[in-house]
Amino acid sequence: MRIDKIDVMPVLDSINPEILFEIYLFIERNFEIPIEITGSIFSDENKKIANIHNLMYASNQGFELAAEYRENKQEENRTVKLIAPLSHKVLDYIETLREKNKKGDVVLTLDIVIRTLTSKTIISPIIIIRPGGEIGTNIERGGNYLIAHNSSGNFSPSNPNMWILSGNGSPTFIKTIDYNSKNKVIIRSSDWIHDYCPVFQIGRFSVFEYLLPDYAEGSGSIEEKLNASIDAIKKMEENLIRGDWNGVIEDSRAVWELFKKDDEIKDLLKRDGYTEEAINELCGYTDKSGCKHSGCIGNLFNLTSKFHHKLDMNKKLQPDIKASKEDAYLIYATSMTFVNLISKKMQRLNPINP
Image 1 (cartoon, rainbow, N blue to C red):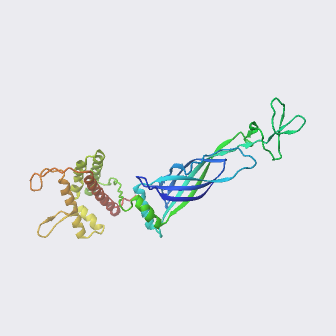
Image 2 (image 1 turned 135 degrees about the vertical axis):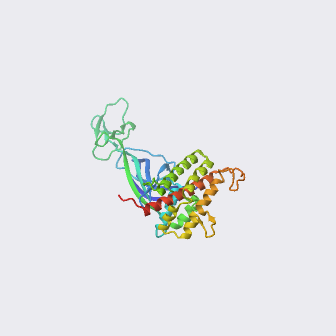
Image 3 (image 1 turned 90 degrees about the horizontal axis):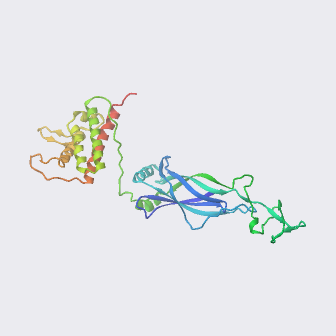
């Protein structure tokens, strides 16, 4: 069995992004049947991005498994289709790799194992000898005949019940064989842009991933505040799972309250290269006239209070705001991003000596 070529294309009528691989196989006719194909798709960085599934034959032709007879093996072409589902996270990763590729191509490796059912059976060259030594062609009812082995190679059983099978030197008649094949598949930049991006709706979604930081070591004020903000993020995640959107926003207030008036945060940002103007825009400041400016952190704290407090800053009753899912995710993503920012700068400026 061997692979002749592989065509790749996007799956058009799928809700989720999927790539279809059409594989052209050459198999030994009547002696090999591909029964299973498994495998994975790897990126140019040798990272697995998808598993292969859903083996489909491209035609309705059946398969036959036969015994060898007069070296009657011939190759025939069969086409199979494999599907690889891609998540939006994977598509974002592929776009990142395209930026590194000089031509903007998508380079994939299709690593598959094709399991075939293989015939090890042969037809034994048995002939009929009539009384008197004549080689017979037909068996007459009631007659007595001798059965002999013909080593000449010129053998053609003329009776339906004379196709005698042999394991060809062993008792094994059928066995499975696994063929491993690694094939590089290149999707040209122009094809990706014109054929794949519209189907996968690339450009109409964004993927951001921030892992919740580990707790900061040490007992300083900024470490304690960072750890407390991580606890607040965890509570927000619990409310996200429950669908308590107002609860998510309420829990976020702990993050902004911890950092909205913090000289340590300002010092951290300054040591990382922030200008005074940038620090003021993020953390807030008091101008020369004594007027206080909230900055991004203070404004986010004020925004979240609108979903929680019944009274506004002037002690006037304000209407309830029922948070929706997108409101909760806005505040959650912003909170996570800010906590990640503080954590990364602390790690870079205050590395822990091993």
